[in-house]
Amino acid sequence: MIDFKHVTKTYKNGTKALNDVSLHIDKGEFVFILGASGAGKSTFLKTLMREELPTSGSVKVNGIDLISIKPRKIPYFRRTLGIVFQDFRLIPTMTVYDNVAFAMYCTGARAKEISRRVAYALSLVGLSQKARNYPNELSGGEQQRVALARALVNKAEIIIADEPTGNIDPEMSREIVDLLNHLNKNNGTTIVMVTHEHELIKQYNKRVITIKDGCVVSDTAHPEIAAGMQNNGEVNVASSAGFYHPPVEKVEIENFLQSYGSADDQFADISDGAELAGSNGADLRSSGVSDASASNKKVSD
Ligand SMILES: Nc1ncnc2c1ncn2[C@@H]1O[C@H](COP(=O)(O)OP(=O)(O)OP(=O)(O)O)[C@@H](O)[C@H]1O
Ligand SMILES: [Mg+2]
Image (cartoon, rainbow, N blue to C red):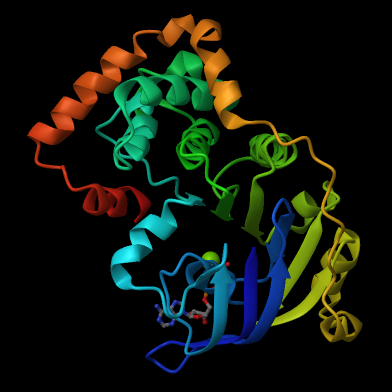
C-alpha cells in the first residue's frame, strides 16, 4: 500500500531531510513514526502525501506512482488520505459540523450523504453534542477530534497524522490514539502516526519505525526497543537489514456505508444535518468556493 524505495529528499537549502529511506507499509497496518525534532518525520509524511517531491527514489501509495503522477491528479489522490495535523487546522468561522461537512462538500458529495456521514463521524469521535459549536469554543482535544472526524468522513483508506497529540494533554492523547486504533481495527483504515512521545508509544503494541537524521534506524514491532534505543542513542542495525512486516491483523472490515446507514436513527440530535449541509453548500457556492479541487486544497493545506 505504501512503498518507499531509496527515497532521498534534499531541500533547496541543502538540508538532507530523508536519506535513502526504504520501507513498506501494508494495508490495514497501524504504524508509529518516531524520531527527535528535525529527524525528518514530517518530510516523510509530506512525500507520502505528495506535498514534497523526493530528490531521488520511488514512492508508491495505493498503486499510484507519486513521482510520475500528473499534477492535476494530485488533489484526487489526496482525497484518498485523511490528514490530521498537530495544530488541528480547523476553519475558525465554521461550526464543528460545517468543518467536517466542508471536507465532504469539496469532493462533490450530495447533501443527504453529507448529513449522514458527518453525523456518523461526529458520533464516532464523541462530538455529536458539539456540532453547532465553533472551534474556539472547544478544548484542544475536542478540536483534534473534529480534525479526526474530518479526516475520516471521506472514508479515507489511509489516515496520516503528524503529531496529532502534540498540543493536547496525555489523557486526551490516549483518547485520540484509541480512536485511531478503533478506525484501524474496525474499518481496516491504515494509520501512519508521527510522534516523538515514547511514553505514548509504549502504551500500544504497534509497529514503530524510528527515523534519525533522515535515515530509518529501526523498524520493530516492539515499542519498548524503539523507545529505549531513542533514549540511549543506539542504533538497531539488525533491523535495517530486513524490514519488519507484521502479519496483517485479522480485522473485521466494517463497511463504512453500513455504519453510516445506522447513524440516521441514532443521532437524531443533529437530524437537521441535511438542512445544515444544504444551506452550507449554498453558502459556499455563493461565496465563490465552487471548484472542487481548489476548495479541497483549502481544507487539506
Ligand atoms: N521546507 C524546508 N526547507 C528546508 N529545510 C527544511 C524544510 N522543511 C524541513 N526542513 C529541514 O529538514 C529537516 C527535517 O525536518 P522535518 O520537518 O521533516 O523534521 P521532523 O522530524 O518533523 O521534526 P519535528 O519533530 O520538529 O516536527 C530539518 O533539519 C528541517 O530543518
Ligand atoms: Mg514535524
